[in-house]
Image 1 (tube, rainbow, N blue to C red):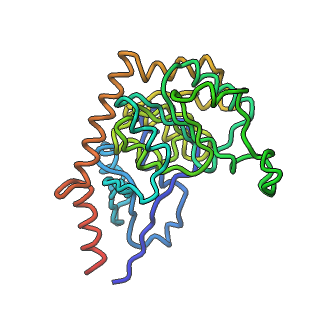
Image 2: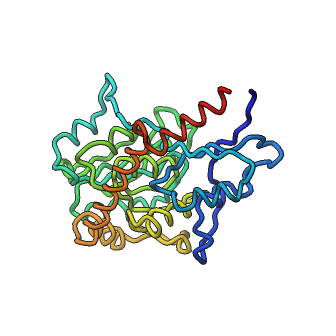
Image 3: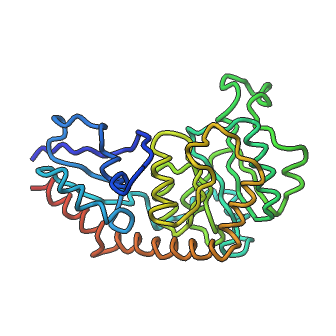
Length: 298
């Protein structure tokens, strides 16, 4: 049987004003597909543990279409590569749950002023961190090797040398899944792209949500207000403002060292266990995948 399914992504920004607008699944599909083209149904990278409250509502709203919630779709058994990243060796030397991982994906940009404030905030927080600051995301993309300095993100003078052993700045690709799965990681400061959210939560890592564009504001709301497994770094309505180093210090310490932060960490850990159970044999996502395979095989 030939089947056509829509694999869903999230691209619109909507600020929830009431309980009805917190239906993240409905939001994720609204306006992003040709209703006539979706003949059979939807495959969604989500799961009962994260959006279970809304899945049945979504199915009722899409009556006549099949809905398969098969997430998370990334590997949960992380196997290290032959060429191991230097940042993983650094993490091996750190105390369990002591390191903040900072990364904003490949489509989010920060001004030089914001980068400086973030750098100062991370330093003054006195917490261990790994910060992915990709040179490829800035400056003149056509600069040759001789002019590579034009593309290099500027940090305060002596920053990396001063923070050796405390913080690690990485200027290239990193194995994010392996980092998030590492026992030393205590939290993730993220732009809240959906894949990053799913990866972080599946490993029980709480999130400091810093949305930049597209689906990210809604995802950040899901993390901080609905699931309560993280805090907002900056509310979306203040997105045009530079986040000060003082605010960054406060929110990092709030999650990493406060009693309130410990409660959030515990909720994230429990949610991670539920997500992983869902993809295990007999779990909710496992059953959804089996149903999907059976459906397209008949």
